[in-house]
Image 1 (cartoon, rainbow, N blue to C red):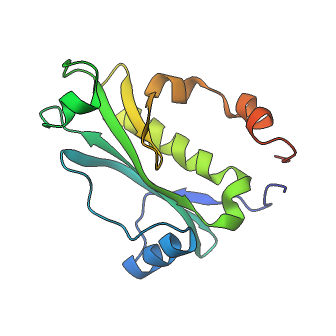
Image 2 (cartoon, rainbow, N blue to C red; image 1 turned 90 degrees about the horizontal axis):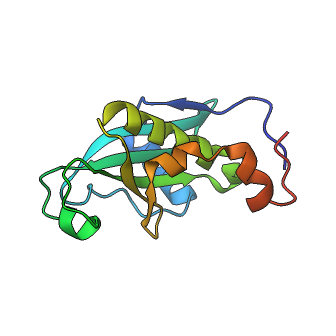
Length: 155
């Protein structure tokens, strides 16, 4: 598939609850739940193609004093920031346009700007895979795409 001529706009302006719930249903996500215990919101982005809500994502930070810190990190170092990318979803027809990656990168850049840290452990996706923020930010999308999306055009 090729990239759409009109780029999808990312915004931090939240949609109405009904519109957000319709997106979650279209993307196959369960209804939005409260953040896991000990986490606080850092940033949220919504993606729009004209008037249609087509994607969203939220990044949370684990509070430095949270009881879960010991289980979520291999260190007791309170300087290590811990994040969680939550509710990242895109309508199926927009998945191969790189929108999920744009949302993820926007969330990571906002996390880095708003959370004072040299690096962070970020849990990503449904599997809650732990990845270092520095790794996620440093890997260029142009290097990854041909390897992970063979046969897909990004023109």
